[in-house]
Amino acid sequence: MKSFFALFALVVGLFLSCSSVFAQEVTPDALIKKVTEDVLTIVRQDKDIQNGNTKKAIDLVETKVLPIFDFQRMTALAMGKDWNKATPEQKKRLSEEFKTLLVRTYSNALTGYRDQMVRYKPSKMQSGDTEVLVRTEVLKPGNKPIALDYALEKQADGWKVFDVIVAGVSLVTNYRDTFNQEVRANGIDGLIKMLVTKNNQLDPGKK
Amino acid sequence: MKIQIRKHLFPVAFAAVILSGLGGCATTESNPNDPFESFNRAMLAVNDGIDVVVKPVAKGYDAAAPLPVKAGIGNFFGNLWDVLTAVNNLLQGKGSQGFSDIGRVLINSTIGIGGVFDVASEMGLEKHMEDFGQTLGVWGVDEGPFFMWPLIGPRTTRDTFGWAVDSYMDPVWHIYNDNIALRNSMVGVRYIDLRATLLQTDKVVEQAAIDRYIFIRDAYLQNRRSEIRDGAGDVDCKMSRCY
Image 1 (spheres, one colour):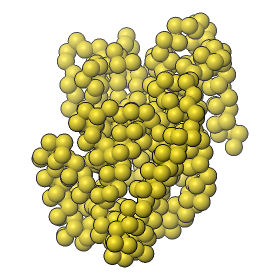
Image 2 (cartoon, rainbow over the protein chains, first blue to last red; image 1 turned 120 degrees about the horizontal axis):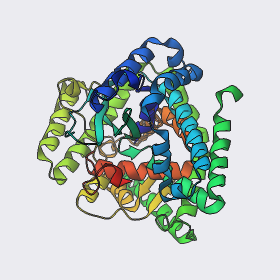
Image 3 (cartoon, each protein chain N blue to C red; image 1 turned 135 degrees about the vertical axis):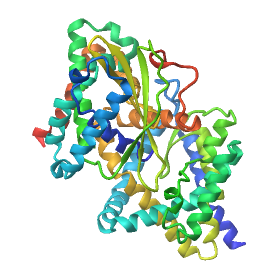
Image 4 (spheres, chains in turn green, red; image 1 turned 180 degrees about the vertical axis):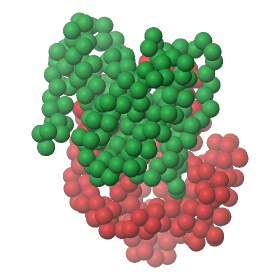
């Protein structure tokens, strides 16, 4: 538990790569490994990010990581049944705001990266699978390894991540109770407003 | 005799807090899975109040102690806890893990100079983390309602009992029992060390969470369920069907 949030930190940063290069022929574990190694290499070399330059970390995540995430799917999963109550316009706004929240949080967490190593576990994927869990472990000497798993779905333009599970905690479902409660109290628009307010608080330009 | 009484003082005091907490708390029905939510939210506020004092100490420690010192302190207490991990792995029927943990303790206590160096990990004996709450879970005990306790933080009912048993067995309380001042210092240092390891976590939670209480509660519950399965996926659910 204690280090899992710190691990949240790594999550988004671990995806620095452009999916179009790989397109479909690349396997999900190869994709995760490539992106993870690319990100770690950059963070290890970038003193600004290590010293807490969040803006730089956000740039990195936005340009390199975002393409392999499916934020609409993530938002839908985080909301559960409430997702179907939203209009297409609301869905778009929800996904945008949720994306902003996750990117800001995880970019910032990336700045806490120190000397961890990542181990890739063999995947149990079978040909024809359209969903797969790619399992990795983050190792830090003297600590129990922390599981860092990625759920991916095969889409027309390649494999996309729709959940990240840190030490058994799904990043997506961890928001569900909060979202459901807000929708129950103030409707879909209430939830949008809640996300906007949260994002404004986090805006690095306002600090 | 006097020592015996002192040794039990903390768990007893803790039990008193539990009882008073349960008795004094009106349950709200907003979330059937969290009947003590209003009590828990109040306790989170209490913990935040305590943390006003604890966090700066942990920050000072984190900034002042060089990395090897912090690693040594973490390893030292980790080695003592490995004893409990070994016992719990054996109680859960995981013999090979349990014996590996015993090997870790033997190696780290000797070659690792009293546990300060985690030589066993370098040798390929991987560290595990087990506690009595997980053992109860493996045995099939329900987790029960969720609680936020002062000082010790989030626990399910099952994990609260597990925590009490772990505290009773805690090597730190036994080994240093002849010297109360030393023992208390050890417990204090361990607490600060643990708090220091959570500093980075705080920052992330603060940024990620919209409702901090719910975020902590749900993350705790998901993490514990996964730990009881030793990280294996939930057998009842396959990928998107889990959602």
